[in-house]
Image (cartoon, rainbow, N blue to C red; front, side, top):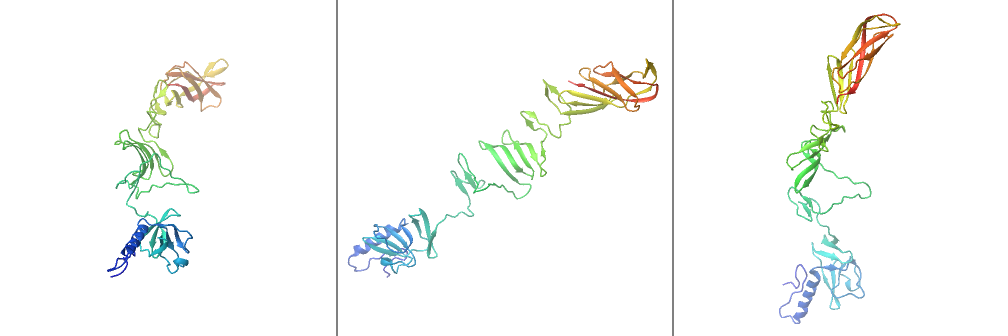
Length: 347
């Protein structure tokens, strides 16, 4: 029978042994030191001058004095002398001076670091689950730089997957931004966590697209689909598109969201400028019916495009039309083409 235990080198009581209490107490002293092992120094070379009872040192490769010949062992001071134990693979010791754990492995004491690679999950202040392998319950979370900038990355496997930030209220999604089901960056919101409405999308070209139905301050936002649309005003505020275009028998017209309207035509012409008018000559009166009526008589300007020596005037302007005539210094055979423009308000 061996005289010491295989793991802790505790001395065994032997048959017919005298002074059994000495052996027993030595075993208790070793247990007292090794259970919850705390080490005062590592790679120690010489015994301290005034060690305390229960003080433990991890000896280096060439200890001296009372430790000579005990390289690599643990030295325990008990009852005024030193007891020695050889550390075993996997022992964990608390480094008192460094306030850190050390692990005995491959014949040496090395700093012990908890496993941090390929963890199944991590919960900070809460528990993690299969859908949230990193879970944090805190008033705030800080991600700071390490001397320069700081970048957070959210990666997905393919274009049809999602890489986004989801904002919830009472565990229901209310807003989301990121790459949701495509590689275009989008911002969308939900009134109930179920139905979602995309408000803004950026493609890879950096061009922003507002989708139909997007609202700002409760009103539909302007976007490519409704910039050119029927205009409307209610209490001075636009209720339709920004610009509305049209044409009719009297020419073309454009309405703007603020109530402004513009009408024009280049299709009117006078047969000739032959009627004597004092020292001048004039054409017959030509009526122009606006392609879109105004809310009040507009400002009308007239010109002509086929005779450099003629000029035009207008009269009898109403909300629905105007009269124009051409003038010239000499009698001029026609036809002479009119260019007429009216500017006013549709509202």
